[in-house]
Amino acid sequence: QVQLVESGGGLVQAGGSLRLSCAASGGTFSTYAMGWFRQAPGKEREFVAAINWSGGNTYYADSVQGRFTISRDNAKNTVLLQMNSLKPEDTAVYYCAADSWTGWFIRIDQYEYDYWGQGTQVTVSS
Image 1 (cartoon, rainbow, N blue to C red):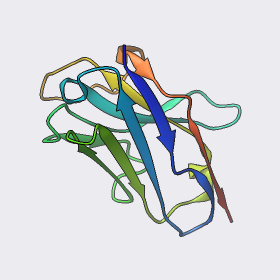
Image 2: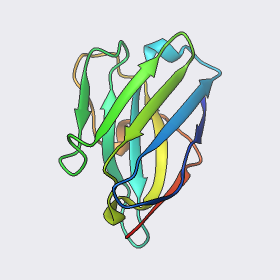
Image 3: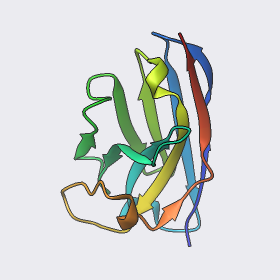
């Protein structure tokens, strides 16, 4: 059983930056692919970014490509999401998730992910 706790959310002006962190415990972190998803009010949860178990492969949603960077530190059991050039449409609750898939490619379907954090709110003002 893996527990995930997100932190780093907050209120920022458009064009600003935030760094989200997800701390994992209770499992072998290095065997999980990790993903970030988000859910805006009135919308379905959507894929944002993911990184495979080794950190050697990443994938991003088109809407964040070039602005967001996902990374992981297997020694510290953490995954980060650096968010730059934030836009009001990035406002959402951001969730960290763990996928037991150990393949090279990235899975973006939220239903493939086994464990979820409680989420952290990101609000971008215009």
